[in-house]
Image 1 (cartoon, rainbow over the protein chains, first blue to last red):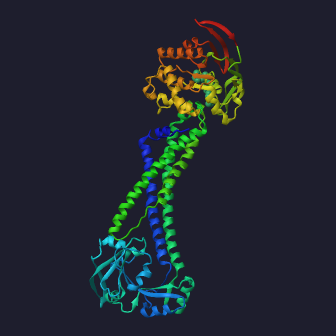
Image 2 (cartoon, protein in one colour; image 1 turned 180 degrees about the vertical axis):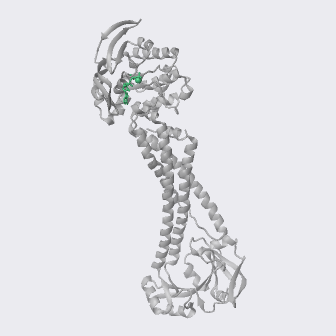
Image 3 (cartoon, each protein chain N blue to C red; image 1 turned 90 degrees about the vertical axis):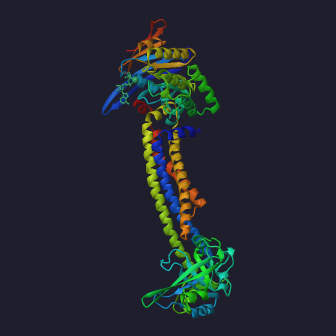
Length: 385
Length: 241
Ligand SMILES: Nc1ncnc2c1ncn2[C@@H]1O[C@H](COP(=O)(O)OP(=O)(O)OP(=O)(O)O)[C@@H](O)[C@H]1O
Ligand SMILES: [Mg+2]
């Protein structure tokens, strides 16, 4: 029996109440979209990042800030370890020297001839990579280009800071953008790549390095090689591909927990409000259901009518929440992009899950009220006259 | 006369009001032939509505049975009851007969939906019945826009929609003026002349006088059961005490 018209009629009978209920669900689904959108972005970011980076072994100083840092001479030691195909040093400085270095762009000093092995299949949307002999030239990631509105040929001011006898000296230099990378949804979107020799001079780093990246020979196990590098070179620590994966998985677990909490909260708020609305609506219509049963309605007819109503409210709330979420995420990303970051991603998966969740929520919250309506004894229902 | 369309046999219903039993029906038996137009009268609380709700399968008797078209409907399984209600019974109540959000047409239509009648057929029959009830131009109005008489006629159209064996009407003229009452009674009588079997509960002797048979109830029992010859010539059919 197709009773969609009847369901629609009842849903629109109490416009205010229905509207508020749908709004409640929409808010919940909106929260899922926003949280889920963040989670999806991190998921994508981490996966792409892992794709791009998990073939290398990352070498950092053993004891953080206080022990000795990495120096140039260690690179050749790493390169001599059997199984290492190549190793090279990088200087990695926050672009905004005032920031904590968590978000935002990084200036990365890299030897021009190591760009290819580092960037792998990442393409340029404009311009070229650095070449040997380049000095104050830069290749920038897509978010950096977006944030500062850069095109090839534009100048980008980079500052360095040096503390000298309780006073800081800030040096600024313009770098000419020679290339812009495509959007990778990974850390590469945030880098400003400059020649490492220029970087060392500019930041007055002499032979110091932030990281050494080691590329294993083909067929060599990354985990084994990590251990061998740690044993073979003093004062360093390695982050193996597996550790890298573990770190990013931990972040994802946290993100997913946040999303699930948002979903649970949405379920509780939205579900209770649907249930409340439906219970009210069912008890107002006691005689109507009694009449329907006297007319010979089956239990399942009444179940379908009432659960159809709550499911419809769920679907409508879901659609509004999803559309609201997409609009919010769009403008949020636009805004964040001007500050050099992106935090949300809308995926088909997220939209489908949100809609399914909203529908399920509406339907499930309608079960109890629907049973109440369907189990009504016609005689008693009619007595309220 | 052939096999009665309705047989009520030793029907009793006892309600429990707290710990006190209320014998609403006490060993009631009677037969109704196809096409009969029968009224049930009696003081308030005598068990008229209870009797109708047992026949209409809205409630289960404490003992005894109801047979419609020779089927003991009171023995039906819970799951079969809705189907029996649809096929055997058409109800007309005193008030709250119609679903307030639906138009007259839709109220008739919905009864046939429950019976899984295809849409085109439903439409044809609803229009036909409402036209027969003189509501051709009121079909698309909601109950709140219909007069009491129009509402009752819509309810009658709905009661007829699934070709039931019996029409049960509980005080169908309880809330309408005398002119409308006469119109409804005339309509019901015409339907019985067409072969419909109609049981009507009423307080109104003027209504009862128009029916072919009057069952008077008292304290859950049948006090008298009289056939009425038109022109108010009363002839006893059978009398129970
Ligand atoms: N659900 C119920 N629970 C308890 N007692 C009931 C119930 N329904 C009816 N009764 C009692 O059964 C008796 C018969 O009630 P019923 O409604 O059949 O009377 P009636 O003849 O239709 O009266 P009226 O003319 O006032 O409609 C009454 O005493 C009534 O109080
Ligand atoms: Mg009554």
